Length: 624
Image 1 (tube, one colour):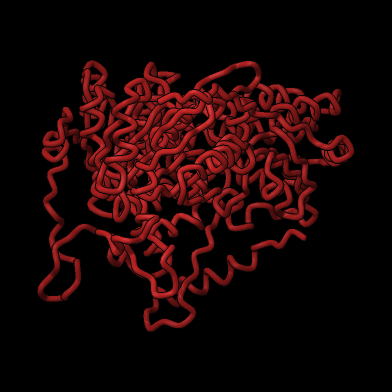
Image 2 (cartoon, one colour; image 1 turned 180 degrees about the horizontal axis):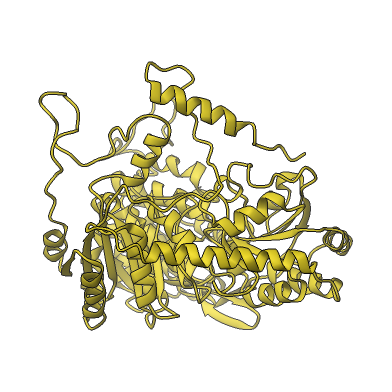
């Protein structure tokens, strides 16, 4: 209702939805609505507030999810696919609906992608407390389960009065649209306050455009970075997700071609260059190629662009062994720019690469270094072909499955994955031809992200075919959004690799001397008391069909090829189930990951693993 003084008398939840509808972002002159709608599951904490407000605003699309964690994964995947220029809001009731979102909120914040969380909360007026699902604390009457969001949110607030919404959502938008600070933003909404009315000023609902800036680096620091590069014998670029989010992939290609400096890609940065670019060494670190890891070991200058230099990218700080190795970190976030005692170049990747390229006119690495890069690329290409063409089994190998799907997929198609052994093998083997062709959630490595994430990717770009590669362990954790894909007519191609357990952890367990304990899906053995009986007879194809998907079983690589062709002509989500041999693994290539091994054990295998661990531990570097 509009009053004579121009204010709008609305319930707080109504005002919130009207505000969200009118938020836009702009970068490089391109303007777009920031929110694509709301994902939600309703309960007593949000049905009469946010639920009623969404019913009144059918132009702000509501999506019905099956799992609260999954809907936040979908929002995060959508935001990642759109280079953080768009996202969804996600609403839940108070209680388990809210806390179900905490895991995915952590993933969004760790991966630096924006999502807005709107969990219902306890009554602000308190008179009917304790309400259903309320956590009671003896030290405070203002604590609720939504306090769990505080450490995993970039911004957190509880709206205890309807007028507080005005200042709170402005701060929320500031964080959501910040390239350096973005992540999960949580606004806890007490269920009574959602329904309370206030006279909101008309200006609150006007179209607001948030400019996404491209911060330029300090000129003196950039000059020094150019000097370091000019005096380096073997420089190496480590390209992270910031290159893709900044839309700097073309600038990176030009910079690499101009200077000859090779590029290793992190999980988030894979696709920064086409796989066949002469300077692209492929993945780097724990899940790196032999080409990237050999160059990294001898590099005297690491130019990290848009990466937080996590332990997988640095192989737990063992990847860079040159005694005088130095770092130049180009990053929009100071937190990342200063890591490894680097020369911190704080700025947007695109503008920084352009300015740095201008300062390095005429510079090119030596012919011997270029020849080494070329030789290592050829060796890696031959190794990848060997894995793709093993002709193992059946059951076939995981590497062969990746090869078959990669060759079948088109240049613009997208592979989606998140957890287990698949991300490591995909990082090494997937031949990416488009900056958005490789979509991995690996900052949090969250099992269950895959299918929900595929939904977000497909909504962001419906013209692309999306191939979700998921292990049986992740599938069992969260396959429910297959139903959502069918409901919304969002077609996904899901390739489910059945290796009868948690294959990644099984391999890791063996590497620390624990023989794969607790990692296989088996019956309990009455004789041993352990889970080492017969393999569980899980019918994944029947399960997928029961959720509304078109299901296909594949045994051989030819079966898989035929199944992919069949899926291409389907109008609904298809799940292809293929058994793989968990013991036929893609090797590690001169890399190591620090996973501590018991210092004291009665098991000889653990004692041997500990000795090897201590030997590797000596290679860890402190960059001071």
